[in-house]
Image 1 (cartoon, rainbow, N blue to C red):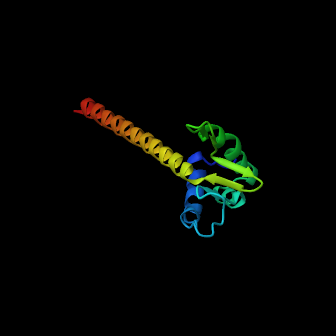
Image 2 (image 1 turned 90 degrees about the horizontal axis):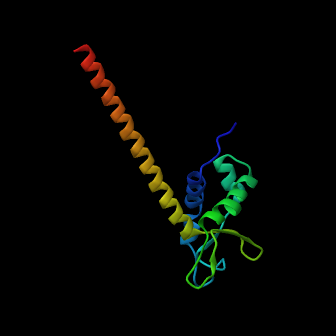
Image 3 (image 1 turned 60 degrees about the vertical axis):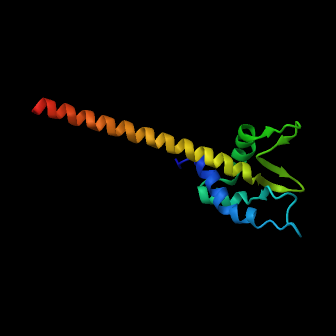
Length: 134
């Protein structure tokens, strides 16, 4: 069975692939409706993370939208991902960056905790061995 990509892996791919597109938004003759909405090619993202196109679409549309979309102070729904006819398939790029930063922070905390626990266990084993053989 192939490894299922994590949210972190999918969002990292989207961020790295479309960061320049987000930055290149032209205010004089814009190529999209809003600067924050960046169109994405789901097939390219899916190929890069090693899963079927429908899997990435489903994760964006059903999982990420439910988890990361919100209502602003006016009650308007701010979506993570849209597949609207006039916008195409696009992500709210600043929201992608924010979620990605949170996921990277959580990942770092997890790795740090595992490293500290591994170090503590190693020192305990060494101390036990020294006390038994000394």
